[in-house]
Amino acid sequence: MGITKNYLMKMFDELTYKRRNHEKITLKSAFKKTIKYNNKQNKILKKNCRNDIENCYMDDIGDVYYHNSIVAQFYIPMIGIKEDLTSSEQNRYDKFISTFNAINLSNKPILGGYRYQNNRLINGKIIEKKMTNNFHEYKLLKFMEEKKVDFLPRYLGTINDKDQFTFFKGYTMYSLPKHGMNLKAIENMMKLLKSYHQLCQELTNSSQVYVHGDLSNINVVFDLNNKNQIIGIIDWDETYIDDAHIDLIYILWTWINIGYIKRNDKKILKKVIFAVNVYDPPTDIKNNFSIKMLDTMNLWLTKVNVSDPHYERIVSWVEWSKLWVIKYKKEIEKLIG
Image (cartoon, rainbow, N blue to C red; front, side):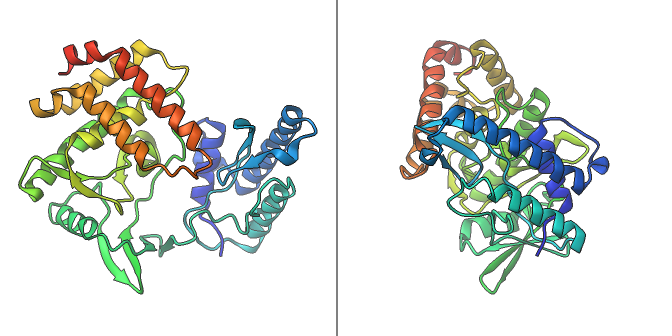
């Protein structure tokens, strides 16, 4: 099994944080540059840890920790979809994996580089995933299909304990920009969320909606030619019915990155007010909005496993986010409710 070429190009584009012409990046140049990048990180690691590298720990996304501090960030190919490569392309990829594993930091070698072993792309059109058996997910997606909603995947059925969904061919991210998403992307997301919630309320016959639970930019697919244009929202396997403000606040929180330690507090407030105004929530959502923000943050934190290697960093990010809400509580009450 090999990897999806466009998917690797997309990840390489994210690694450099520069938008390039997709068609002009070859697999050969991508591998060459990522090997160079990892070698540079290896030098940084040795400099930061000196002769104490054996006490470093690397998680499965490439962050290297030394006494709870990140000292280097390696590039790991997080391939989510399997396809065939030509023999020469596969050889280049195998060489890249061998070069990475030679760093000898990972407890588990990257055997083929597949991060999501249970996902498979069929004929470039269907995603096959491990069965979730979530009745809410199936009901929601079938309803949205009947309503001809094009930004949610269609649930095609379950075969041999595998759920099948339609595939969005686009651009996805694996991390959040430090200063958050730009205003146009946030605006587009707020508009989609509003229309989605209105349809959900028709399905639930109440003010409640089907909550996604993790509507960060990572679970959104963007147009390849326009990273502000959203073409799909994916991974509905943990959806459940609850209040509409939960996903709204989670998007504000993550897309604006309220928890970034070097944030500009006033700019964060302006972005939050902008996004809320685009969504235009009813009074029951506006009321006590700062309290709802804190409750949502606390709720999300309860879902994080204490054994997660990122636990301390996540807790710090959440607490830093809550401090911002507390600091601007009066402004939030005045401008939102």
